[in-house]
Image (cartoon, rainbow, N blue to C red):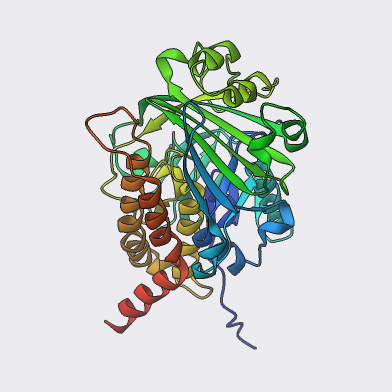
Amino acid sequence: MSIDDTPKPLQIVIIGAGIAGLNATQQVLEKSKFARETGAAIHVPPNCTAMLQWMDVDPKDFGGTLIEQIHRYDSNGELKYCKELSGIRDQWQAEWYLVHRVDLHNYLKERLARTQGTLHLGCKITHMDIESEQPTVTLDDDREFTCDLLLGADGLHSILRTHIVPNFPSPYPEGKSTFRWLLKTDDMKNDEATKDVVGDPGVFVEWAGNDRRLVAYPCSNNKIYNLCGFMPTAESGKYAEGWQAVGDKSALAKGFSGFAPSVQRLIDMAGDDLKVWELADMERMPAWVRGRAALVGDSAHPFQPYMGQGAAMAIEDALSIATLLPLGTKAEDIPSRLAIYEKARQPRVDYILKCTRLNGADENDPSVERMTAAEMVKVMGICFDHNAIEHSRRLLEEDERC
């Protein structure tokens, strides 16, 4: 009788089918039904593009738009900083793309459908056990999922987080809200007040003044512009909780009434897709792992959108774990490998979170000085140089030599 010594893959369950969850896939439990997917555009910077390329994912296949320039204006529309990126992009390990989040998410879902992974929608978790050698998740329909490794990719309001660090403080409001809407690039080109904003392809634009700012950048092959207005929550009108709350256009317009005519026109052009959500922050978690369970992405370290690295950090997390748990890894080795994951990821995330908060500082905040545009470009270079797969692999090799 022959013995089958083919390495068996670990049984992995992921809570949450966001970008992090779909990058670390086997059994994925998602509470929503994906009935209506919307979302803002996101940055896929070089450190993230390198991770996607490792998985044979090319952002150009789902409308990835190369960022070519960065423009920063004051609230009156006076240009304060202009950076052409053609002279430095050959220093990056990969390209820097701007993508529509839904385009990326749909692409990853399609890839999952072609693998042995399974996406379960409409899941409501009623019980979780991470103390045993095989973590278990039970749903309200009595389905039970037992695994070798449980990953929490369930975002800001993670339910696994409370099991990793019991009684850990919940995320708290940061005091700002974000309005998000999309415009067709052609419509902006054909409008006298906004045509200069889209004069060149791939331009990231920001207008900032005192305690608010508006950013605009293209995605979907330069056909769509993503716009985000950041302003105090106290002035943002009444709205429901969650990412899909309808924004109060009059509140947005009033909040930016003192800005340049181009900004006011961009707000006036906003349609029924105007959404708003409250930004949140969270204390640093002392641990992301416990036994054979771990957190990835926003469940471990929610990011505010001031540096375009939130999605990248989630993907780096997922690929770090994939690197540390290659095919053939024994289940009993999972806790020690997760300890390496924490060692690999926490210092980097801490640094980028610090820089994100600095870049999110108000222009008129006397307690903290926002990074200058030049300082921001320097920090981005540090972010871009890191390769999470290579770093995790080095740490694993060092551990195996000990």
